[in-house]
Length: 188
Image (cartoon, one colour):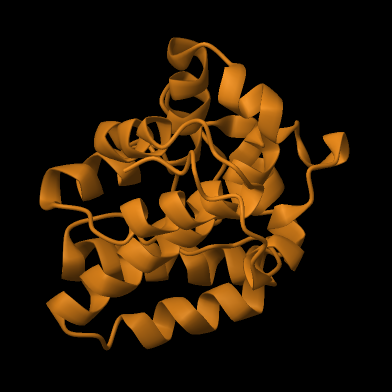
C-alpha cells in the first residue's frame, strides 16, 4: 500500500518525526528519490530485517515524514522467529562494545552512551545479567538504551528476567521497533 495520495495534514505531521529539516538526517524528498538499493542498506542498519526494509521501501513515495514512521512502526511490530534472530544479530550485548562485523559500532556506542565503561560494579552486574538472560531466553538481551542510564538498563534487565517466554519475546520485538524508529531519524 502506497502513501502517494495521502496529502492531508494529520496530528502526526506535528510530531518531531514530521520535521523535514536536514539536521534530522535528510529530507523526505531525498528519502523518496534515493536509489532503492542504497536506501535499503541504510534501512537495514536501522533494523536488520529484509521484509521490514522492503515494506518501508514499498510505500515510497511518502507524502509526509510521519507516514514513513507509521509504515516503519507498523512493519516492525510483527517479526517472525527468523526475523527476530536476524535483527538481534546486529546488536552487541548491553554494556559491551560492538565486536562483530554485523554490529554497527558507531550506532551502538552512541545508543549505549549511558553505560559508563569505568563503572566496574555496573559492568559486572550487566555481564552477570546478560549471562542469566541468555541462559533463560537463549538470545541476547536487547533494550533501547538511548536515553537510559546504566542503572535503568540494569533494573529493566532484572525485571525482564522474570518475564515468561512470550511476554519477553513481545518486549524484545517492541525494543527492536523503538531502536529502529530512533535510527530511522538519521536516515530521514
